[in-house]
Length: 99
Picture 1 (tube, helix red, strand yellow):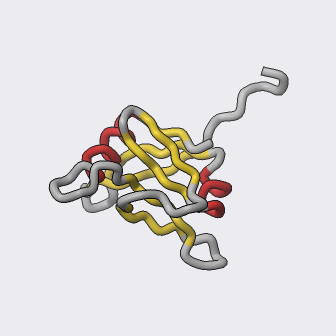
Picture 2: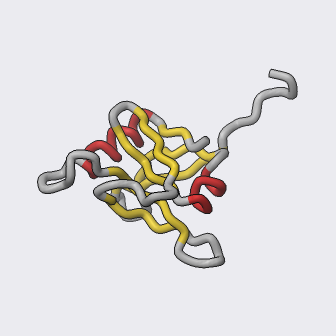
């Protein structure tokens, strides 16, 4: 399952609680084509088949393909080459077998 760092959860809360945003808004990850490109939008509510994740007061909505792709990822924040805030995906570390 997608995991969020505390800074990513804070960023999602900030984005989805902006003035004028619906009370139950969330950040929605969806796939846009067969190549698996992810689209990130602020959504008022999850789509009917979305998986809903909550972490530290933030809400994430994932369509089925996005949920499968992000299943073993960690969502964090970072800075792009121009110093702008961005989301960053990292692979979750696997523990030793049997742990």
